[in-house]
Length: 441
Image (cartoon, rainbow, N blue to C red; front, top):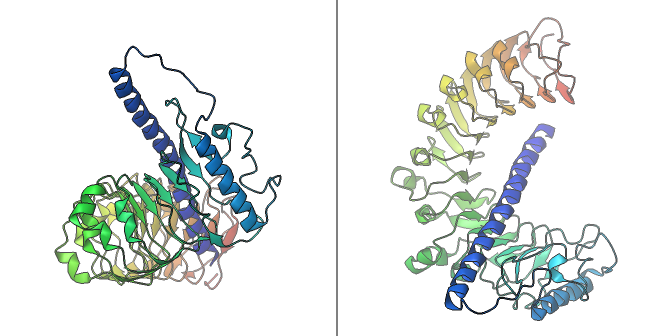
């Protein structure tokens, strides 16, 4: 279980890095938009003096709205305004709201409107559960990014004209509101880790709404209680880059779509974990030439690892807990892109390709619970960045490879194989977990 936990932590860290990059990009886009507005205003009134208010938030109604939100939130959580563990302790009505923590204001507009609120993990040491207070954000008309993940909010989704809406890991329930289709500027929607039920709202698919949602790039609905069939029209949203739907055990995929679906989008990240996918790895995946992250784990996929799939040079591949079989193609390891390969608990067999060590960017290799046999190729010791190696419960034999003590390898599981000879003593000095049990040493 420890190795699986590490893999899940890796996925989380990848997402956190994505969020940081996304925040920077959103701020740059907001600055560009504000500059365009300023240019048009100056064209219309070139002779009028422009006053500057770079250091202050001049919209009093916005400050009042934020102070009201803080007050209502404090009552709901029994928090103290002076408690540094309370995420809004810097919000003071006598100070400039643009200097408050978790608040971002536009830098190019005279009125310095609030454009982003990062209200994630507001209370670290106390428990609360309640609705988002009232219409606290109604006056924040320029707000484009609202991040409220990792709280315990319930109730309705704030009605804003947002680009970014993140309500991850709260206690929202019921159906996903149809009104989401009215967020015409929405680029990123993340509702993962809640208790939403029912299907994916139809408002996202009607021709009118698809035209409105012409900027939608990211959908994250994973780890809810959604049910029904996954609509194939999601792949008709041309701007879509990232689609995460995994972890909804009652959300299923119609495998008849595999032969006829022709995606209009070009995805870079796709998660269809635990969806009831069956048959071969869907061929339509090959159309996503920019794919860097793919999670099709916990399905019923069968057949070999396709050569075309190996040629896609995907960076992170998660195919564990399926029924895939055969040997792994040499082409899979002839890439500098591969960083994670998780194929545990399938029916792969034969020996590992001799060129496994050519994948020098590989950091996580998990092949446990298959039928691989013979010796582990010595080239695997060339993968200097390898951090986690799980080859347990196979039929590997001979002597385990000798890893450089200066290597980064921290987690090694070679248990339940057919290794023989002397117990190896040459492993990385950074090793934290070393499992060699149930062999023939």
